[in-house]
Image (cartoon, rainbow, N blue to C red; front, side, top):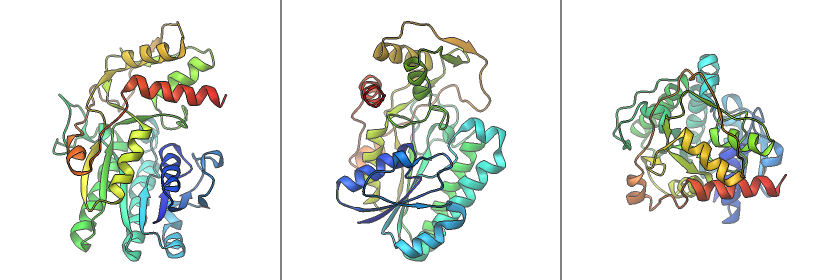
Length: 302
């Protein structure tokens, strides 16, 4: 099919573009390169440098995609706390512009949302029906994007899909951009630098390997409607993740500890069983196997 990947020069988007090309699709990428990079754009994909807030309509008119995987976003919680207006501009206004362009040209849309930041504090694996109580501007803006999707589905009879990602990690994740703790730990261990855990390290997250996320995204591209959690259903503390990173890298240094950060939830884990039943998808990697693949990619390209 003819596919458009917004944010396709970034972490998850470039992996999605790779997978689409591998199955023979025509792939177009819309990316401003504000945080994405040319090095991540796969051979065979057509890069259109532009901003979702002002260039979506033009590119949809030019390319006429059958499906759009909307992965472009302001994805850092810390940035959203410091600059909530910018976060909303990209994640809400940008969402509306992409959504309207998709409506104009009859394209199917798959929207990358977030589980951890939308559900807020969890007392166990949160299903899709869990109350949505974001405590960061990033979570709020993603929730607003979801509501636009649901509203357009009701208003215009579209069948767009929302995917709520857990904490994604893997190759190509920039430690300075997405704020992924795995990327930060591995990058600093590779450089022989000290690592810092914010808070006491007992806060938990659901870590999902990017290769598993890509399979869910492609499955949603052929599915009509719905909202699905994309995670493992298994929570790991940041202390446990640090220890797992030490195992895979051979680093023997203990972490330093710093003050907890604003906007961080203490417990976040999502229930992916609905995606298993309706999309035929489940995670194939646990934390350790995903870390091994990530580390192997980092060391092979060093």
